[in-house]
Image (cartoon, rainbow, N blue to C red; front, side):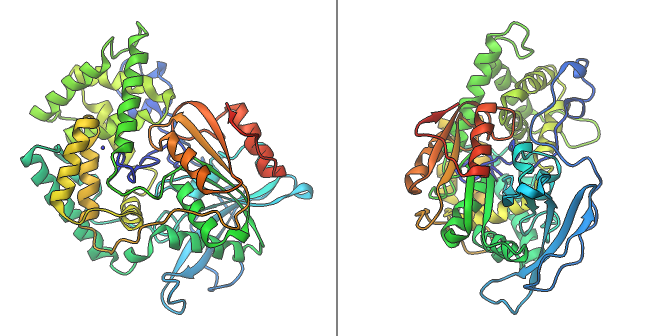
Length: 502
């Protein structure tokens, strides 16, 4: 248009709101409140949050000291590990990294520690662990560690004074001079507010610093090696950690791979979402009971034309604008299980009710820190610094992914004017790294399957596990063929055979 974000090759890979992005569960009764058939719709499957009220972050331990855990959030244990804000200046300012531990249930057979990151950038590893997303077979054998990366949740979270949804209140339409100009102005206000509020921290939010934080956590936990599970953007963290600290990795699972070699303004993600939209429409056309009817894309185009002419008012919030509509469509495309929600929202909007899509757009910005997403994405990738180049590439994306080019424009403009120099990631080599298990889903809308294929070529000894299906990421979501092979690898270091497919 993962997550600013959703469909640019480097934007919103998880999406911004991807299935394993550690987002709060998006329940239809909330998203579609007021619809007559709410009770018949499934919940939006985009992750779940802890059912307990989070405890305040425990006081940070001294720099370099072991983690000091205290009981928290029910049966969990929490700690705050102090790390340098700038690893090139270890005696300077520090950042506290919040972590949670779920002790192995079978301590007598404990393998070690498993660090988990759900994606984003901006997703909370603490929420992911506390929501029980790690399968029991693994949780029995590992101390499962969730951590909030710097800039997220309990780790010095970013909250820019101008909210990240501001550019979407209008019409970020590539090729429309008025829409481009108003979007550029909104982005400039947003970027400036982030710089004014977080000038000292912004240069130190990239994935290289997050990977160094992970190794500081390893030290604070008293471990020689870690096992790691990364979803979506979490695969970027894993790739960088494996490059910086290969001997510290016992096992690594990367599900829904981000290609760190791509430029920031790459249209492949927008094209993946366009493909998923067409799959949704074909599925809808095959079912007489689909609320969006036999031509869901035609219905979407009618709704787009309507909101472009005049945003649809929504009680209690801002109107449904073209930009917010785009995000409302993106969110349920992350998982096939959410397609019925998209169909119902389309029917409602076609009838003049913008509430369901407006609530979906709001959910897009909840559960994961979008300010941190922008900060990390703008650092980690190579972006055009010239606004005219951004406009040209966004207009090209409009021809290839017409329903998701607005986010390409917003992402490109955000990073073109971002107040911190870029520090693009480099391809991993896998030198000295233990064999890695890479998972790719063939119809993943946020991180294209080819990314996983390409990464295996970079990591000697790694194995690709292919999941033939839809949705963003798959491990721990009830696909037994996938879960069993990943569980076996994590616990016993037994990799699947070549060409493993589920």
